[in-house]
Image 1 (cartoon, rainbow, N blue to C red):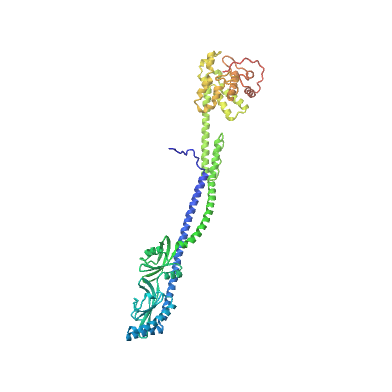
Image 2: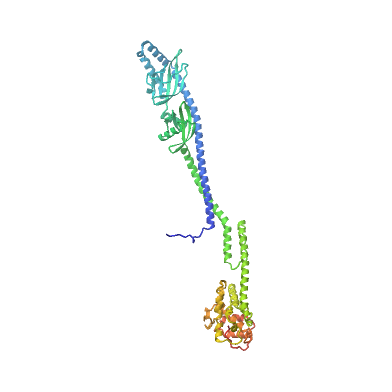
Amino acid sequence: MTSVSFAGTRPPRLLVRTLTVTFLTVALLLVVVLVVVMLTVRMQVRQAVAANLESGQRMFAALETRRQREMRAQVAAIADSPSLKAAIDTMQTEARSHGAGANAEAIETIGRELRAVAARVDADALVLTDARGVTIDSAGRLGGQWPRGARTGIVIGTEGDGYDGIIKNGKSVFRVAAVPLQMPDAIVGTLYVATALDRNFADELTRLSGARTAIISDGLIIGTTLTDRAARQFELAVAAAKPVGGVVSLADETFAYRRLVAVGDTMFYALSSIDDSSRAAMAGATISMAWLGVAALVLALVGSFALARLLTAPIGQLSRSLAARAEAPALASPLPLTGSSREIDALTDTFNALMASVAQAEAQTEAAYMGAIRALATALDARDPYTAGHSERVSVLSVAIGRLLGLSDDDLEVLRLGALLHDIGKIGVADEVLRKPGPLTDAEFAAIKEHPVLGARILRSVPFLTPHLPIVELHHERPDGRGYPHGLRGDDIPLAARIVHAADAYDAMTSARAYRGALPSSVALRELWRCAGTQFHAEIVGALANALPGLTSDAEVPVLEEVT
């Protein structure tokens, strides 16, 4: 199974993370605002549709009241026709005198009169009944639903009141206006003007109200401009409760509905699709919001970038300062305050305080380090009173030579401490050999020659002394390859080891030993020049000569022994 490691993946920059978070936050807010605006637009559209339906309901109620009043007035004018009344009176008189057959001419007269009236009246049926409510004759598109001799189901009272309401005739439901035919001494019949409550009536209602309509009677829809599916759903939702208005979902659309008028158990409803009404408004709002969203996102991106830069620029500046300070050789000065925020300045102050503590600790460590090195050198010098101070003098002289040769400060520091420790290996040499007043035997000299390797072995266990090991181990190597312990030649010998070799030899010649006195500086320098190229490097001897001004004596030069 292959495992994927992300240990080497670099994290994103703080600028990118800040930009991402701020941009996504603003974008999320924009989405929330867009949703709220869309919901608000839809709610406003719903309220507007409901308000329009309510306004339409009031207008339709007024129109319907006026229409029915006009219809009743028209029916009353027709019922007041003298010829119609006379024909009915004649028919009834002859029926009482001669029987039913004598009524044919009068009935024919009545029929012609009704058909003439029906042509002028906007109604589906014109029906004439006698005083008992039996149909005498009918006319109009649906007049055949009232056959002669059938009862209408409505009997006008003897007071001569009219009738305005709903009647059912078979499977059809009619809106009826009725006026009695009043003779001076009695009511001789009734004239009905009937309008069928069907799809045609619903279409007329739609034209008047400007909305879809539905007519419900006895819990069933008898006429509507809705689709069949929507009509069935509206019937189930509204028929039983008979509400005045509300909102209902029909055939995957949301409708607001309002009851226009109620006549008995028959309700007339107007319905308007909120989805249709809001579609145009939502489309316009969507386009506007889309442009607004694009502009807002651009502004959000610009603002997020500016905010991210504002937040990360001081941190980036501090980070660069820290990186530069980490690469600097020393912590010379504290980081300046950016002044961008209290937090960044507090972080800078904390870092400066930390670096000050580190610098103090380094100074203390360096002091302890130097003290330990000097203690080692002093312990070595203390074993032989003739070599007391030798390591310190070699260190000072080596630094002077290195400075004339153009060594860097770091290299000079390595040279200084390495020279202090160059003879540390002599700690492992026996006192009788180290302090012998006369010449050394071959075996004793061989023991002395082990001190560079022994010194390197001693110091190798101390990590911070690693740069100084080449000086300790190789300061007795010679350009001609006759040095020890490895017999290196020429430039294979490190420069620092070459310098210490020359300084060591000069100090050994100018210091008193048990077997001879100290040589003058001029004599020691002439001897170094004599051995330049074989035992010493010429450029090192030249630098040493420049470091010792005034040493130009022509004193006799003795033969130089091998410096140990």
